[in-house]
Length: 227
Length: 200
Image (tube, rainbow over all chains, first blue to last red; front, side):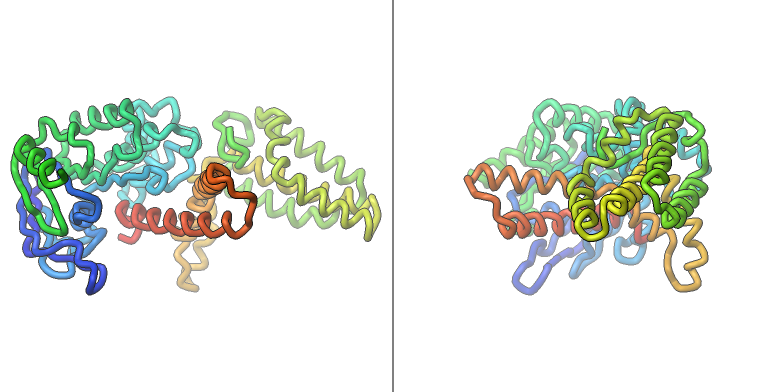
């Protein structure tokens, strides 16, 4: 399991907008949830983990790889799934989008085709391989976005509110898929039900990590904080 | 299926022709179109385009769908030429536009975007000496194709929001939110590309 180390990390978009303030945390569990109000810094925290955001001060490492110094190697290990699938599907058709993540990996076309076919089948998208991605339903789009990340076989999957735009059925489907993944998963969410069975939950408030516990007490703390 | 001319899977001879050859053929057709000067010649070109659709296993209705977005441009162009240069010129100009759009759509309907992008990347290879990154050029084309339905969707949402608030058609009230949302989408797309290692 990759070890994520966040040491003395602060991040500010400008002098008046400090979004993370002296965060220290070490994560090595397989299922980690992150909760917090809008603007609490949880999405910035998630973006730190694959180098999408670099800390203003402090260091972030994944298995010893520094996100500032070893960004490329970190991104090969850390997959990222965003809230809005439309913003992360970059190719016009389903199979092409899954294949996009495999370019520059030194794979032959046959290997790419085989991995794409296996990934589409694993997530129930094999009947849509040549379909335009924009014609998929919201749930299918999020599954495609997830499949496009997982085809690269990352060691850690960071998901930033992947179910926020989905109905209950599709959110449940995504939760089932995530539950079955062998990878380490760090899930940022407002859907507290998804955190059942997780190993650990981090609660953020106003840029600070204010609670770090197993799900039940952490969620209770968060509910009290939001009351 | 969308009217954007996106790929339709198939096994016809046109599906099997390499993307580069199809793009080359399209360029030649564009150059050759300047030789069309008579309405009967345009009619023959349209008939050939129609036969190409049928030979690719695509119904003529698919060809019609490619032309639908051109209706207003075609009418305005035809009207201008009817008044200024006569009906024959109007038929030739509008007909040539229709033929070229049909052929371009036929290329995208019978070619995967990745194959098209691959052909563009190979063709742009010599531009490396000018510090142009062919792969980036190819990605730009793929993103442009991908973003068309996204922007169409955003425009529909903005229009629905206007209607819901009882606003009458106002170009500014339509354009500003559409522009803002398109820029936000571009921003999010850029972040997603970075997350998927495009800059690595």
